[in-house]
Length: 314
Image 1: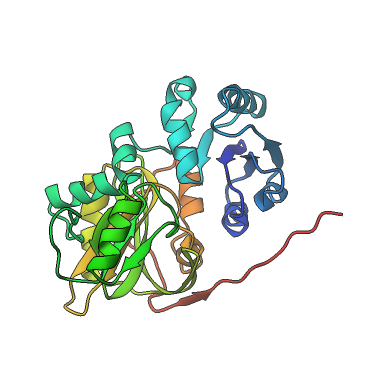
Image 2: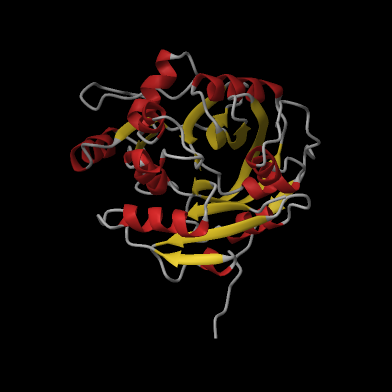
């Protein structure tokens, strides 16, 4: 069986996730990493690494195309929202031949990466989500939350306690969106669908501890209502490959969606180790094997505690 050669675009610190691809027992993978950060930890665990220009540089496309040609790449997996946006804008340059792009269609990317458009999508498609608040209208119910429409990892988010703060932030941050601050249990839902768009993995994880937007402690809880709502969302978005949804479970039992990430979530390693081996499934698809919807053994109630590690280069 030939090696499967994957280009991981902007892997940066995702060392544990990349290592999980190497643990496939039946399929040999050759991993290529490309990042603009020469100190990217993930470049130390791939088989071949490249430092590329910033995505904003005009030479970046040609550099990635050259890497794909030189390394006989079969698939490109963008690892960040910026990498997804870059590949979306330049997908025409990678559409030829048998190269597989793990990339949603343009409209879905535009919707998912813009929190304002995503909130409107949730409302139009009847998915429960916090309503958008118009700063020009009085809103007596606090707290609220202000979000950067294009922010990642909780960056540039602010909790608003009263009308004075609301007036301040609406003037200071006119492009931010404002929503009700949801009180409840926070969940990430790891998603993987096959090439046909059929959901294969849908695993809710409660985010017990988070730091700078990254989950540090999580617990898998296979709540049927969250799973079914997530299946409907992923199917409506016509997703292919890995993704991650986020939301809150209120005391009333109602689940509210807040975010859609068209890439692996930061805590997906928990789901992989709990029994849903998404990297193995991706490799199976790349060698032409079918990955159909079926029940996977996932350890309900299992927990994960993450910690920082280091790679040293002498």
